[in-house]
Amino acid sequence: MTGIAAAPQRIGERLPLLLGLLLASLTLRPQVVGLGPLIPDIQTSLGMSHAAAGLLITIPVLCLGVFAPIAPVLAGRIGAVQAVTVAVVLIATAGVLRVAMDGTTGILLCTFVLGAGMGLGNALMVVAVKERFADHPLLLTSVYTAGIQVGSAFAAVLAVPIADSLGGWRATLLIFSLASALAATGWVLLTRSSRHERPPGVFPRFPLRSRLVWVFVAMFALMGVIYYGLTAWLPAAYVELGYSQASTGWLAAIFNIGTVPATIAVGLIGERISRRRGLLVAASTMVIATLLLATVPAGALAWVLFAGMANGAMFTLTMSLPLDVADRPVDVGAVAGMMLFFGYLATATAPSLLGGLRDMTGNFNLVLLCFPLCALAYIGCVATLSRARLQRGVRQL
Image (cartoon, rainbow, N blue to C red; front, top):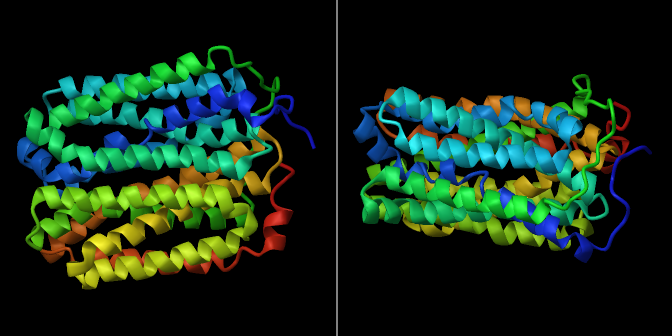
């Protein structure tokens, strides 16, 4: 097996880089997740339809896919650590500039640049784990996915209170952008002495003919439709049912908070169970939770907590799959890049399409029923992932 991993070290000797990965991952979702509870205010402020407002979620999610294949190429040029620096600086800078924009066009343009940073950073995390922590893949995957989930949870909890206290949705986005700038600074300081390692002339070859990786693509797309669909429209759906905007913000918050303990649990015990079994349990929980959200709204706080826990486990385990089926960091990056590229391209259409479905039907009933159906389809994909199939992998790219 060939590779570029650093010489073996105890995990404590890599603690600055581990903490840096956690900080960097905190920047990857807040400026999207925090928009969910604020979409009604943004629509009023900018005069947007439901479908148009969905672009504020669709553009970053689209970028998560479009820029994913570029991430392993950039890592091959300058190393995964330096490439993550580029990503987090883009996120912080574009976030601050977006707050200063007056028109819809400028806001959407900055949202695109911000999404580019998110797309690069999201895919680079997998490469960095393989490059620097190949001896603890699932543990480190759970660390950075926990960071993503924690950032999402804080964004969901604080979005509406900040807007109410400081004068509107722009104040919320400014606070999130400044927090991203602080996290980016922490990443730079913690990794400034990290060695730059890359294989000269090695670039990713994407496994377009691998049926296994296409299964990963389908799984990621279905999971993304559930997550970003709920993020975009669950608060608005419950506002229509008579809930206050503040209380629907808590629904989004609990959904994201629930992901954190599940992500940590996967990191601690995930190696003791098969990927297939863990994914089936998580997806089955998602089916039940989202069906109850659609049909029994009185128990929404409990249902959304279980949905969040299911999402945390599904996301962490799905993101670990490229680490299981490829050896070299560049090949892991190729598998992850393909999974994220096609997965997010499919996911990116979900907020606007679901918003359009709401516009056509006049309510969110059919929109909410889409989520348990996606979870059932996810279970169908997982059922094809035998241990032997994962072990065969796609090791020669």
